[in-house]
Length: 153
Image (tube, rainbow, N blue to C red; front, top):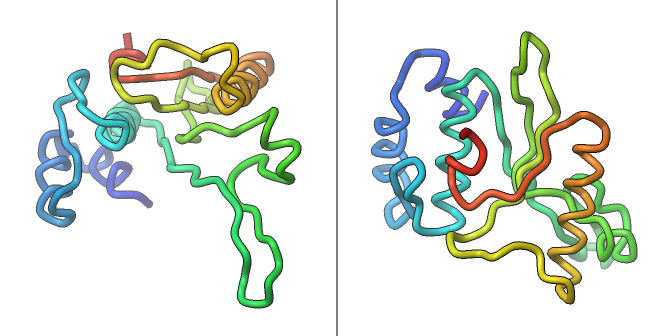
């Protein structure tokens, strides 16, 4: 269980969770829902809001590194090879959103406020857009977000 799920279960306000996280993680970006100032603050606010609404969004770190034996280890949803990852890149937040009593797969790619949308020549953003389109095509929720308002209008 995450702190966000616990907070939702016990009726703890998003503001109280933000205050607690600021105490536990000094220097952590914060912001009121809808007025976040950084990508990290947007992610935190989205996770809090998802839990408040009975869902869950979890951070999906993605990348690759060498282990102690020198083997390449890839991590993150759908990150099976560098070739695939260049064309199909999973979202920052992955989770479940309750919709009419059914849990719907949710993928949210978080961007800093002011971002203008996937640029045609940007391979990373195009790969992110491809993943979100795939999720939507199978009935899930897949979108870019710069604030809680982008997700929960």
